[in-house]
Length: 213
Ligand SMILES: [Zn+2]
Image (cartoon, rainbow, N blue to C red; front, side):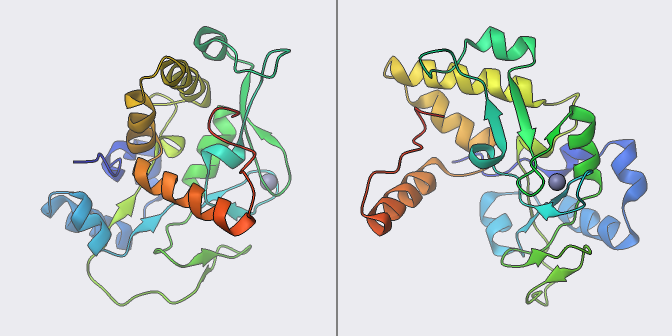
């Protein structure tokens, strides 16, 4: 059984709680009544957090591979896990204005974010664009990049990623699968499928593979 999602309850700090509307509170009550299995999440409206950049005000879905920059050594390889953990070698960068975020910026982006259902987008003014399904089955998909800093930071994720890639080089793919499932809230198989599909479409090798990241 894949650990498909990090429950929204993990993010229920006082700060976010204050900002929740009555509507969201009602959704929380609904989700607390039902055990959060992956099947139930998929059966619901699959809301995902679009974070709001504190610099440009634009909304986007966070993506580990597109939005996080990791410093490399002279040979172009990842630094050691300890170096990432020490700080200063990994940063979240807004895809629109290209400003790097501090942890404080990231948390501001999370708390100002919006939760559109799957298939919808968030426009510049924060309005949800797309067909919002009429349902009482609300579900949420969250990942480590939207957790508060006491639970996760970009530095700690970078450290974990460096460990994962080291393990993969030693032939152990387990930590990589765990990173996809537990940190990115994505099934590992799905990512592999996505990659081969993209390769097929592009007719060429995908340059940015997990090893190069
Ligand atoms: Zn921005």
